[in-house]
Image (cartoon, rainbow, N blue to C red):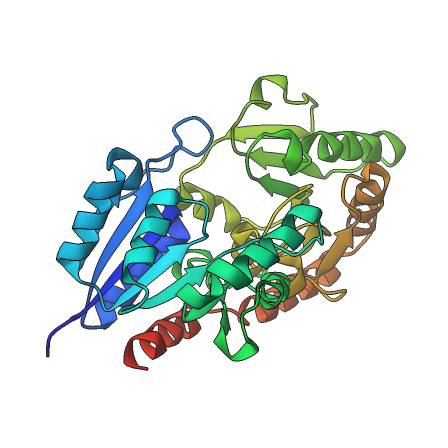
Length: 346
C-alpha cells in the first residue's frame, strides 16, 4: 500500500513533539515532512537527533516563500497540518492547497477576550475557518478560543501536545523536600516572585526545603542567590528526565503560558504541582487532590501555596503525586496517534 504523505508546518521543534512524530511514523505507513524554525541557541539550545527514515525536516527560516511552495507541491501531501495563522509563508501554502487537500489548523492560544482577539474572531470567520477542515488544540482553554473563531465543536480535537511518556512516567515511591522550577529565566515566567516567595518562606518558617531552578535566559545573570536556592542552568531533555526521577514538588509561576507541557511532564513523574492560574495546562493536570493553583503575579499567594506544601507530611505529598499521575493519563500518545490516524483515514 502506498504510504500517506503528511506535511506539518510547525514552529520551534520540541522534544515532546519530535517524540510524537517519531512514534507515529514508526507505527504507521506514512511519509512525514516537517518544516520548522531553527533552534533558539540562547534560551532553548535543544539538541535533537533528526534522523528518521520516514521523516524529513526542513528549516523554514532558511527557505523563501516560493521554495516552500515548490517543496509542498513536489510532495503533493494528503494532509497539511499548520501551526497558527501568523506565518505568511505557511499561509501561502494553505491558500494554494486547501481546496484540494485536507488542512488542519493547530494553535495553543487561550481565550482572554481582548480587543485583538475579538477582531481576530471576525477575521477568522471570514478567512480562516473556511480553509481548514479541523482544528487541533492542547485542551479546554484553547477549545473555547476555537469555538469563538467559528469552528464547530465536532471539528475541534484536543490533545495536540503530549509529554514524552517513556521519559517521564515514574514509579518512584519517595518524595524530596525540593521545589523545582523548569523554564526560561524571563520576567513573564514569574521567576522573581518565585524567588522572593521562597526566601520569605525561609525567613518566616525556616525549613529544610530547597528551590532548584532549571533553565537559562536573560535573567540568569540576575538570578537570586540564596543558600537554599540552586541554579542548574539549561538541561537537555534526557538530563531533565534523570533529575525528575529524584522527586519533589513542581512550581510554574508563569504570568503567561498558553499551555505548558512541562506541567504534564512533572505530573507523569508523580510530582505535586504549584501552578499559576495563567497556565493553560493547569485546567487538565491540577486539582485540589494533587496541587495548588495560585493567583498570577501574586507573590503572597505563591508564598501561601509553598507554605501549605511545606506543612504537609511526606505521605500526603506522595498521595498528591500519585493523583498527578492519574490526571497525566488524561492526555496520551495513544490518543494523539488515534487522532492522526482518524484524520488520514476519514
